[in-house]
Image (cartoon, rainbow, N blue to C red; front, side):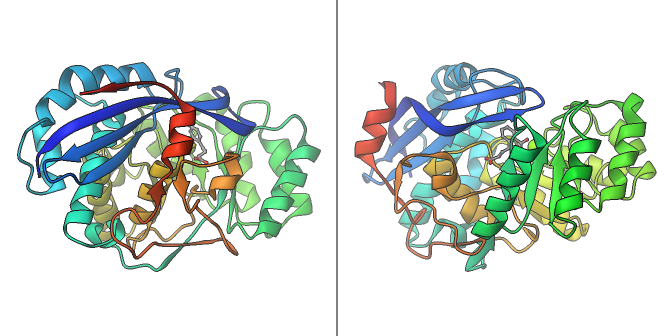
Length: 367
Ligand code: OSB
Ligand code: MG
């Protein structure tokens, strides 16, 4: 394929409720949507998942647009690409900026799946017909409100819940949840809010039979996480620290984690995500698919990726209606009894809803 035209849209989607983590609150999701057309007229879509501010990792909506406009789109336009796995080599002169790279690589995977007449899941080598999903719950105004929310998610069928923690909002909150829901498949995510000086708190969390503790320490650390993992039995799950296959290889070798959260954007695309998946499988490290409060295109890509065999733990890909009044795809992503059916139709298996997309577009540029 040869990309002949790429449209970048700046989108703004209101959220049903604000999402609070240790680093801040998001109450509407702004992101870039990529529409790529190849010489035969096949259209592929991608989503740049970076937030407006660099508080999860360093990329932002504006840095992803800058990378796309000034570097990535010029490399790809009118260039013959045989297979999407070639994209990372084409981008190898550009350091990091995984979310920017991933957004356009995702559109190329979409076109490739359509042209080879298979679902994106099949194109990636996925076989699962349905995937198990959980839900991530932000910090709430009170523990009572949090517990009520957790119960409502469990009643909807979600297979596990993840609760955000931060210093001062950790052990007592988890103790209260466990008192009411002793058997709930429960995990916590600190988004890097602790250091080894907080060993005391982290060891107390070890007593609550948590599925895992996600990213307790610094975003760029794998050494301190290895020290911590030796002191607690709960598996550490790395999120922010894993930006590539090489990061994953080193973290596994050091014993920095027992689980890895794979986010397509954070690791630079579907090809790299699949490589990390395969590496983890060889090393018996279970993985699950993380989320970036994606709209429908990103959600569709997450579902296809999660159809690979070593995604053995429920991920964060909740149904569309969990976050959005209306999603940008039809049908929307539906969760039934904690499962999402993996589309078997050609491409991503969902149709971009141009009416909704146009309504939510703040600006656009055609390249
Ligand atoms: O750390 O996984 C995270 C949301 C925003 C930024 C970082 C994270 C999250 C989530 C929610 O936990 C993921 C989702 O539901 O899409
Ligand atoms: Mg996380």
